[in-house]
Length: 110
Length: 141
Image 1 (cartoon, rainbow over the protein chains, first blue to last red):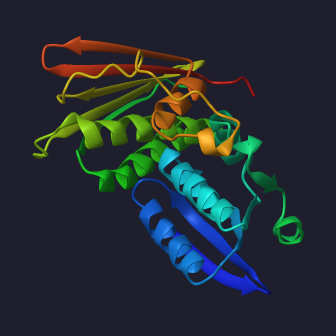
Image 2 (image 1 turned 180 degrees about the vertical axis):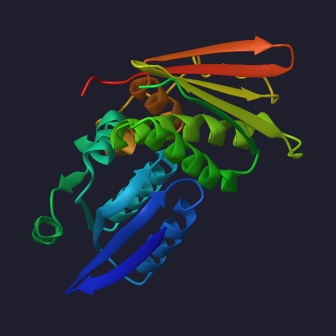
């Protein structure tokens, strides 16, 4: 999986490319932790090029959401494939996560 | 659609998830399976395989886990075999989904996903083997 990290104003954007599973989730966790330690409070994760997610990926998203909540930060997820979004719904994560169709929506929501 | 079957073996190492993904893609493309259906079968096998690798072999020695897939017009049947400690995922407790973030725990989440996205899951202990069978009905397009 590739993780492209960019910044727009005070928003840290992570664009994921490939597969987020038990193999690749530690790399994403590390990037997100480092960003939060450097003061990131508003996080957008762009799923447009993410083909695959397992519970290991969901776990990192949940952990990051909890960490950001503690520091009064925000996280918005965007541009998911329908079948990826369905996994968030089956897990019940859509009840506390903001999931929007495009990265522009995400930047205005976060 | 013609009936097609594949079987392969994976080592008890998480890095084998890549091989699992490649094998399933080749199988799915061969029978013209939708991207969504391929994803769901991959996810179910990933979660079960990851569980077996994480908890099935406490002494951590090298082991093989067998996967077999077969297909007819209306469904995919998956069979997963390992020689790890007995574990019945069909009757294991899964996480109830929580709507409050602080109450949300991730233990059992993988199995919860498997049960929701597959149509049937059965388990047998045969001698030294765990045998898990999954059925996924293929939605009519």
